[in-house]
Length: 295
Picture (tube, one colour):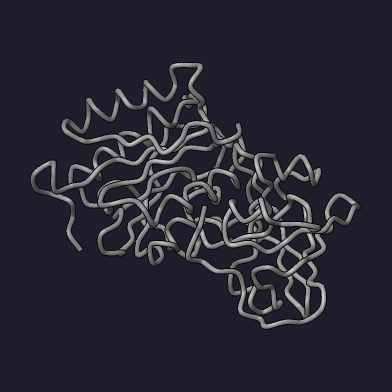
């Protein structure tokens, strides 16, 4: 694997994700540190609107983005444990064509993205100030310098003490049960349009016999509602008796509950981490929803 040395254009970008928001100067200060320490590095802001302190939401956002990133280094900071004994880490992966390293807190934020890139091949614990001298801006003081160094070609091993990749903190797996004609799945994400992404995938839909045009019962927040399995949002205009609630395969390969020009999360009364049950009416060919027309 290349160590990233060479012309700046060959090193890719620094991909930056946080829960800092845009109101304060935090994200801008970290960007300034990156520009100062890694001259010529393009900095791509994935998002700074991860809900504050929500490590799970940040990990899922980073995992969704990862397949679309080119070469470079990922810098991710959603860090409610800043200033505590939680470790600051950097790790390398071997996925060709994608980011070669990730930097951030060891709280589960990085592992899903690393696994999407083939898994961490090596990891180190980044040095931090002694507890009595520690401040609360590791994004600026610890993570940004490490990301800049890795982008510039500094070997991972020179940045800190080795950490077995198997010792990295992992988040709990989301709830998911598939059996017979039903799927019980955790809500992973609600996007700004109110679409409800579930932990279930297209493979789970096939296993439960869900096919385009089929009517299903969606159980959420103690209420059951009909929905129709569709290929795209436009199909909801022809949903008929099932109303405007639909189930489709989203752009990330997950099942999602959607409404035509309405927020499915509001209609269903759900939020992230809730559980939703989707049950098929009758039989039919278990071909599953099409993945040809994601939103």
